[in-house]
Image 1 (tube, rainbow, N blue to C red):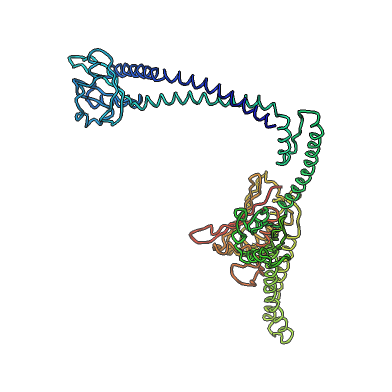
Image 2: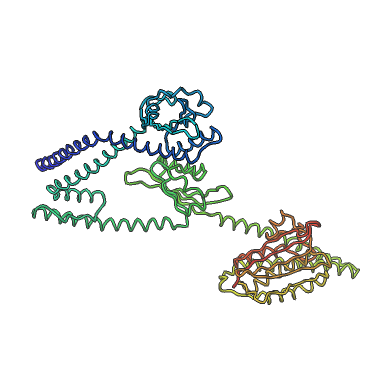
Length: 596
């Protein structure tokens, strides 16, 4: 093996040595002529630019003002990347590297070599240090014959020596860059040639390293001798078996990850340092920004010192048992937390936190308590009144028939109120219990509207209120609701409009469809609803006047039932008030229901 490596190294060194010597000779030969060629190219290029500038001056002149000529040459110099000067009688009359106001301060140029040579009829050329620009420059000048009695002038172009040197340097680097790939390519070819000597053993080594790195697809297909065949087959069988076991592990890992991601409970996994390692999507419903705190302490993600203290105690080894705790979070969120400690493969403490959001459960319990309390309050007052007047009629009935009738009317009004409270509670419970899909339901708006207006006709006549129903569109589609539910919605809103509208006013109703929904609008001329009450008017048992019982027996459940039923069908109910800004009166209740 050492001898094989020595031969391989010799092939590389000798091959590279011969190639480098040949390239070095070619580089030296090329560099010796590069300066002369570059200088000649520069002379030809500058002379061509002189001819161009002279031609442009002839076509553009004469100039009205000397400054116009200065500006014209300055624009040419910017595009050519060179300094342009115009000299008359040894005096500089235009120069693109000097402001026009300072041209008169320049030295006399009549004795400059390139100027003298150009006046003699040649193209003058010189290289020297420029005091004006403080750098080495290459100058080239040409005589311009005067026109119309004007004196002869000299047109001079100048470029920094560094520009020429930079050009030479770029060409040398280009030559060097061309040699580098040649050297690398030859090295690769020499390496491939020498590698055939030890390719068999190298393949064994690579296959073993690949298996160690997790690439179990690698197989040994070539071996230098028959003695290596059993070893090659053994390594191939080992790789195949390991690959099969790894697939099983990866499948199990994928199943666990899918369970982790799909859990309805929020899960937070901590590493051995007590920092967040993983969180699942469900945790975002409890801690919306938890995924942004990967690698940080649970306190930063949860803002709960209680959770952090439990984690710290487990990481410190103070407890090894699971911990169950009810925790309260901000925004009235509640969660049931289970903290499970375990040990990793290095026996370091790790923690998994599982959060079950109980906010909805707590909210339902709170709503139930409020519901029972409100219902009790709504029923207690009329029941007490009924009991009191009934006992009065039994124990000491009034002799006056009108008084007895008054007592009976009060008892009847309170009984009606209790009936409406109980009826509303049953309707609300029914709307929450009915769980049919909207796609399975259909109801005619025209039929429901006709039935509802007949139901409201007597109450409207008592208050001399006109109910105006705009003609329904012929193509008005049915709604994706239950017929009884649609009737309950219209009944509740019309009853509410009649109840709060002054006598002698009107209630306007119209319907339309946008193709996706049916929109019903109910406009009344009653007292406006304040912005604060608009937020609560659809709450259960809420009454804007604050009374528990009124002459109509209102229970404060009608609009709550209306909105709840509409939302069960995927719709919505809202109010806009007041409609008359001047008087602060009028309201429009709008119902949007999906099309069947």
